[in-house]
Length: 125
Image (cartoon, rainbow, N blue to C red; front, side, top):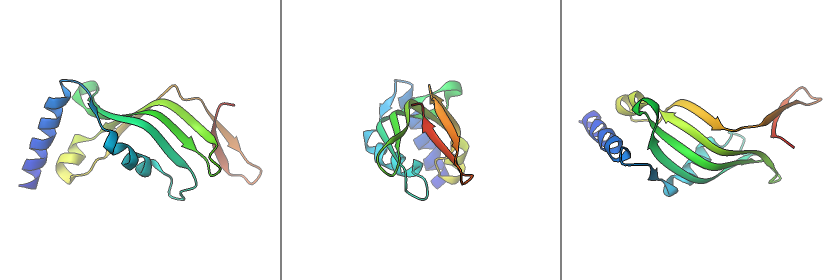
């Protein structure tokens, strides 16, 4: 019964998305928490989120104005957009939102090896 309801909900969402993207302002804080590293030292900020149909009629979440800030609030990464393609199989079979693809628009990142041997990630200077 639950699987049937999930299939109907996904079909209804896909039908609605054929009319255009859906603004998901309420989802933004959840996405920020989901992207946050386990140690909570860095923080993601997302200006807006929308759902849309992507390639091959796959439902995608699109985050716009994505910023990763370090412990002191300094900007580590800024991205105009990130696209997260969702697995419909995982949603229908298991009831979970699982990424099938991830694409960042125009990222310019710098990997730095520190004296201690750890790797750091930052945006261009």
